[in-house]
Image (cartoon, rainbow, N blue to C red):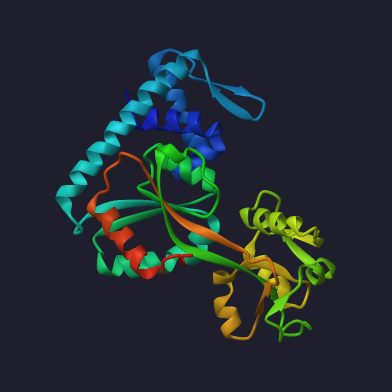
Length: 300
């Protein structure tokens, strides 16, 4: 049995779609389909069937999936074991991160860490918190950096690295630019640029403001933090984003940041690992670097 074909089947079955599996494996969808078809031809059984827009294992596929999970768990354990012999001169490190951390925080950290250990090959997956968690539990990632709520807490080792502050941002031409804070009632009257439904950032600020009886006057919805920042820079509305995303713009005077009076907005940056999986030297070194470079969360 070809291990690459088995990997293709396993990933499609776990993702529930060829599109998602192709994205995760960094291959084209047609190539992935051919690998699954080759495995089906070799075994002489249908492994996957389509239901609507999704893909589900057949009875034979469900049976094979159980064996595949055990196979790839053993392979990961073997890799971790060999990793211990290589030290930090060679090796691989697979990291997952939610979008804000993966786009804005992680690149600089990886750059400085890799300069110290140039022999390491580092692979990064940027996706939603549930996607990162699933890949951690499937032993496809060594560690994850996420901000969202976590399911499967008993299967994850969770460490809070720091508290991330959210802030209201306005342009240099906005009347609020010289203020340190704004009231929830004032914010409700402003033209607001919203994140997309399902965004963890949006969920946090809407839930917090709803407790105060405040509903935002959303005039546009954008799924990109960069697009939101650029809209605000033009003077078009106000928005709420992670402060770390706009620190450079604040220092340059391109944006101004305010707090919401009586409604602090913070979320935790969490380092997650799979319980029971040993970390290789590369993983241990990177976690140590993150702990040193990210200030710990304040204590009460």
